[in-house]
Length: 252
Image (cartoon, rainbow, N blue to C red; front, side, top):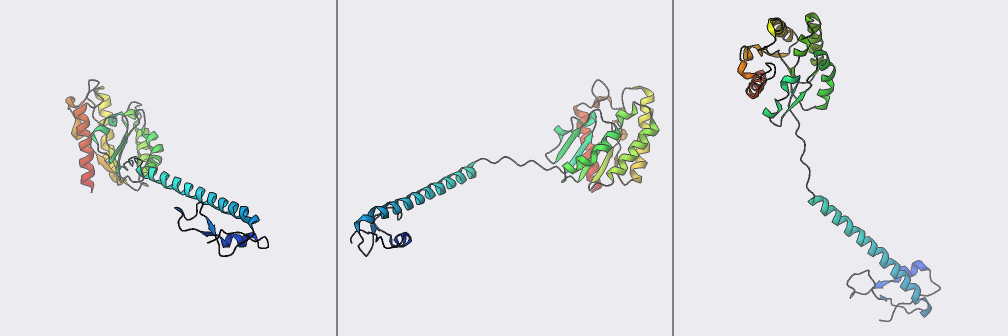
């Protein structure tokens, strides 16, 4: 079959339609000999070659881009994916008494410790904290021991009432962990904490909030505290965590 030539009297678009690719080419569109059924003047052979060469470049670039995209997708599929962060179901928020509780908890429990927080501080931050953990269904609050040092019992009761009113709007079960009886600090501190504990029992009941009575667990148990008499040792942390878990379980 004779080589394909192009008639000058025909349009360039017609020439594109007359291009036929030889079947022996390894790629049907790459640098294949051109053939047609009609012979054309020789001076248009170069035009046909340029048209075919440009078409070859376009197809080649398209093939390269497709290959690059496939390679990039393959690399992404083989790239190790980071582990998804666990979404906690239980949130424990409190002062220094809860700082070591996290090591006793599983991945479904998150502990947030604010060592110097007063009751009013917790009231102001608890709604924002709850918004940051939307999967939480149980919230344990341990606060109040820092406030007792101010020796303003009525102010402390008012602050606790504000906190209880605030947590009533949460879409989660709320547990107030009561004050821990001290093994040091004198009779006055013990009396204030004991009075607060009794008041919290009735106040939590009035607000439909669960109460964890730590006085029944830690009273006169010096071996559960560190040398300072205020912070739990490892055994105390274990017992405190167990108390949280048991109270939550009983509420189901």
